[in-house]
Length: 180
Image 1 (cartoon, helix red, strand yellow):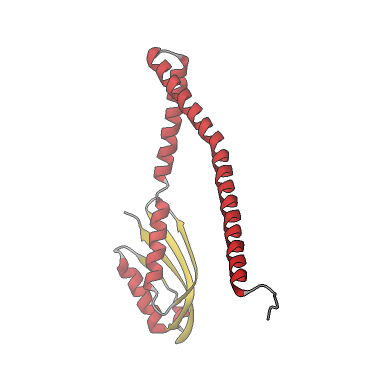
Image 2 (cartoon, helix red, strand yellow):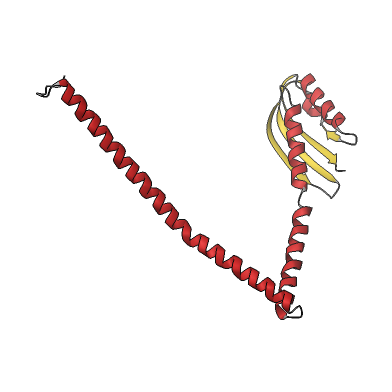
């Protein structure tokens, strides 16, 4: 309980004035932050503008003198860029491996997978090694059957020794998938 000698209407006015002052300080801090952020972006804008103007001037100079030494430099950079793009386009196989792993995870039903490792054996085949725990022998055989029927040419190696137990079977599968 607060004991003040101020009447209630004056206390309300004081609280309102306090809130207005806090709001003014917050607006000032916010405007100061905006001003600082604009000032910090200005040098980057100037640098980009100067770089753009330099590139435009260089392009104009190349069009005036096509036999210049700068043209050879630009052509060498273009060849280098094209070779890097060709290397990147060759590395699109990683998406195929991730699609394969997503398909395996979606097929698993009640089976718990503890480890998945994928590797590219050759340019036409992928090898995936799976380890996990199957609740029953039937679930493991169904999982193996789904693997083999997913795509023609798939082969799953499942040792017979793993089918000796009927429940909580630890297994290790190797899937060999042929790439298109």
